Every structure is written in structure tokens, then in C-alpha cells.
Length: 278
Ligand code: SIN
Ligand code: MN
Image (tube, rainbow, N blue to C red; front, side, top):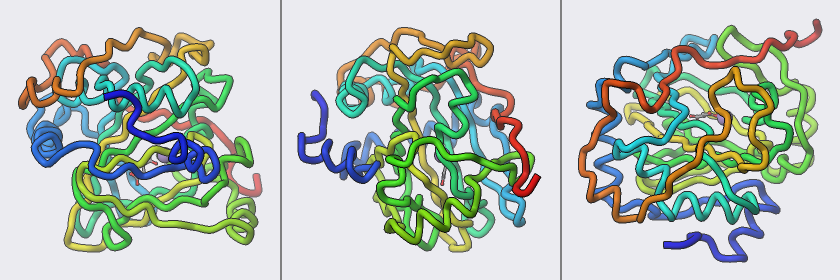
């Protein structure tokens, strides 16, 4: 399957900074991905709890290479890679994947940030990256779905300030000014939907106080010609071998091997920025 978005949908992404594609993965594919997240020993061994500073915490796992597991193959499917290439306007490589498992009642919040507010510090000179959030559970207002400030990606990279040890946030003054002019929207999604969003789009999500968990997988791609100028971060260009869309079902519940070909991270990267008012 080539790019799954029409020219009009790509134009919406360019205008709004996001586009929600419905039913990109079918029920059995979404179940395979969910089961892999629940049972893969590599995921289990690399879970990090990201505290939100307000009593909540989200279980996350981060990996840099798309391998041969069912979730590595998902990130390599034509429908994902060709779509990322159409959105970014050139060949891409896998930059990072992330499980964000917001559990019922305890799942943590993420404050307003841009992904490029982090990735700029990893050696990406241009904001030519896209995040693709694959919903594994239904994500809605009650269980802390993503929120966006529509069109905020057009403002460029905003200053971030330190919030906690585990997260930075966009300067709240800038967020308030942006919200006064632009619409804030909830990106509600059903299992199998993919939320594509620009790396400069302001986004956040609430704590999960509901009794429904909210698990998602976020796959991020960088344009090949935007390869990191630093080699220290492990997210530099490595060729991405695309696979046919059928590869996911053909793989079944294929988990990662013990040799860590996925390059799971042992800690999240949080750039050292000043606290507000410092
Ligand atoms: C993120 O911004 O990386 C994750 C946000 C979320 O899972 O709600
Ligand atoms: Mn983010």
C-alpha cells in the first residue's frame, strides 16, 4: 500500500500540524501489537516510569531501531513509511519508537511540549520529523488522549523550560498566548487509528483518572537528509528496510530477540534547560 493519505489530507496535515487516519491497522494487527507490548521480555526489561510531578506516572519503553519483531515490522510497513515520506517530502529513517502505557487511574500527564523541543538537542538541524501515534486502546478525553494546539507547528521551535527531572515544557506564557489565538483540540482515536503529527506541534495529555487504560505506540521518523550531526545519541541514520503491509500478520506474535537489535534505551533523554524564571 503506498501513502495512505490523499493530497487533501496531506494539505490538512500541513495546515493543522496533524491528521488522524482511521483504521490503519485492523483488529488482528492491533491485537498482535498490544499482545507484543504486554508480553515481550525486552519491553518488560526496559520499562521506565515517567513521573509527571503531580502524583501520576506513565510506563514507557523507548527503542531506536525497527527490527524484526511484530512492532519493528509495523514501523517498517509500506503504509507507515510511505506516508511518513509523503508528509516529510523525502526518504525517511526510523528515529525512535515508544510505548506509552497510561494505566487506568494512575497514568501520568505530559505537559505542553514539542517533540522537536527535545530532538533539536539530539542533533537534528531541521524540524523534518513526524510522530505517528498508533492507538492500541481507545484514547479519549477521559483516559488522557493527546491534545493539540492546532496550527502551532507553524510557530517554529518554542523555548522549553524545566518542569521535572523527567520532562520539560513549553514556556507557559507562550502556551497561553498560542491558546488565545489558536484552537485546542482533543485527538480522540480508536484502536488501529494513527495520529500523524508534526514535530513542532504543541501537544500534551492529561492524567488518566478513568478506569480505562490508554496504551499507544508512537513511531517517529526523521528525513534521511536531516540525519543527526552528532553520533552520541544513537538516533543517527541507519537504512530502513521497508516491508510489505502483510508482514505484520505473517510475523504473528514475533517478539524481539535477546541481543537487543532494537537498541532499547536505558533512560529518556531530557535536555538541560532552565526552569521558568531562572
Ligand atoms: C509524548 O508526547 O511523547 C507522549 C504523549 C502521550 O503519550 O500522551
Ligand atoms: Mn511528544
